[in-house]
Length: 205
Image (tube, rainbow, N blue to C red):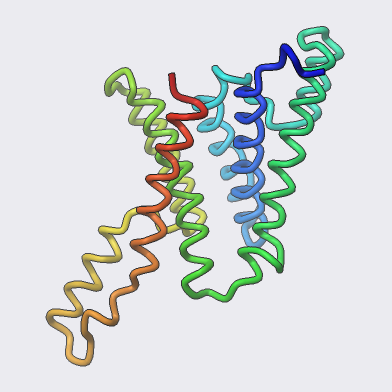
């Protein structure tokens, strides 16, 4: 079983489902219906650009089963996709549970994890849409991905936080370099490295 299954596609389904569920749960936890719909829609748009050419970007067991019933997939590929999607959703749900990210306080741990996921997602979209050079479509996709992570409140640009903290450390009485929030720098930097590594090894040519 699975001898002819493209495991790269299965890993892409795991990855895509993880990001979709993590992002969806992040906004659904406290967001309104419009924000939730925007988050899911923009996340899916970005994921389709990144993993669509690899696996078709099902990221949904119903879509996979629909393809199987339409005879667009064989049994082995269908089962493998369902396993990948199930594992991706489970890992994302655990990360957002009381035992995972949501269980952390609003301190370093939560900031680093959410910044890592948000920046990795943004970086994968950016890498994919710019690999052939910049064009209008690339700017829309990159802007959409950035809109999404900002909507979720994820720190993805360490320059924004570091610049303000560094300025305050130099000019504001009672502050110093110890007041710089290094977690808002570490999370995005690690996420950028992680996003490039994931894209290059799992999705890239």
